[in-house]
Image (tube, rainbow, N blue to C red):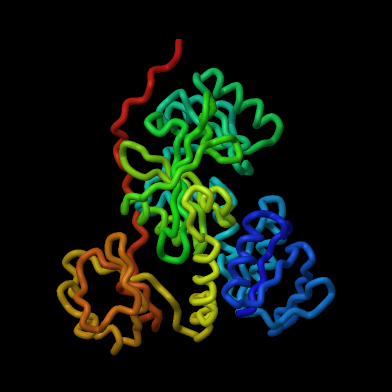
Length: 395
């Protein structure tokens, strides 16, 4: 396998370990500075140049895109995708995870635990927002912060208001997040590769520090991850569009609460804590996937007039409930079932003998006119009743 690692720091621990793991497995690997690429766009011929030289012979790319170069870095990854080079993480996944607000917005429509969070710009909305997340103490986060930078614990509503007003006056975007008291100073980092967690650690803050990041002096120790937490980490990474990710979670009384998903997780802390060859697991995964580059299914399959990709819903009481996929005669209607979603499980390429149940969702490609009657109506989602009582107004 000929692999390029996109990284601006070839001497960083993570980059060195990935190169070492690739070389040790007999792969041809090179570190490429992300900012030295040039993107050429011509009809039918997406192309890339590196340091002025034409680049077209790679099998795979492992992006290690720093926060400061997200826009250009994801453009380079996107170009590799158009050239059908396997990318360990997609450009969309990197962009989604890099923005804290966007990533939580995406997760919020799925059955994945997240801390209650709000985002406001008008000063008059700040105090009501603080109370909606449960009142002080609250966590205030800069959208662009990394490694614990820009994460503040405000002990009172007045302090929180003052901090948010100050940050907004300097044109900073901030999130207000519920403080999970039972997990103060602790979080879990699950390292996801493909469809499994290959390593996990618990990070614990030291002294009066509430941030558990290793870069802020937090202590890391290996942990056997509870299956519920492992499944949540994998689901969160997949929802975000990432194959390789560091998923940070809080151990709340209600179960796992996903804090962040990192598309370029560091290896030093987790390898040091677990003594596992995480870099090797990453390289082995990429080597196994190079023959299956990511395809934009909608982009590829919707070019035929009258055909497209749609998610179909089998409601309770439907004529299809209790029938197998073959008995449903979907294929006779020019509808091909690509995957079946049932609860939190995904069944790829389901057999024709698979029974259909009420509540199933089918990802299908076929004739749009034939699928129309199974596309769920866009009904307004009912709001869940708010159970917790909001704190009384101060004063």
